[in-house]
Image (cartoon, rainbow, N blue to C red):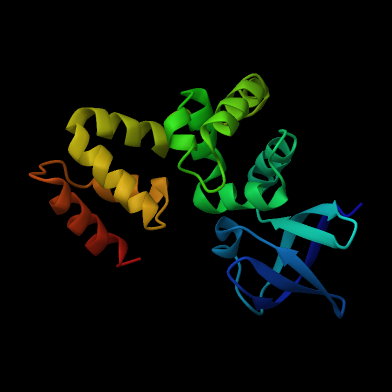
Length: 200
């Protein structure tokens, strides 16, 4: 079983890359989180999960140990395969996801790709006890986002939901919205956030 691969990124696409390891090109599926950490021509080390199917052997790669660990937790849950797990990792960070579990936020989890209400409830049920063995920052962006949403009411909550649906991550949205607090409408929040996010 492959534990990790270290090599040069030969090609990089939105959901996979080719890793050149001693002149052998490995096709490795990656999340958006990992994609943001790599670029063509640089040497990287990716933690690897090997998924064996009847018709293929697929490699899933992760830039961080935290992302790899969450992937392993997710695929251990009935009804969640590697593709859905990778989609979740593309939509949120491991820390943000752990906070959703900690808060038992079924509604937020169902907004992740490929996750329905029953699956979200199963995720919380199966992972809540495992989180006691997982180190994550309790002051992370997710709690800040939730507190911000509570303070500003429905306007901020609706704006955050709209921005997440556009593909932005909770950590990005929270970082931008912390800079300002005097809002008059949901539309104003979205316009401001979009303008700020486009600078990155």
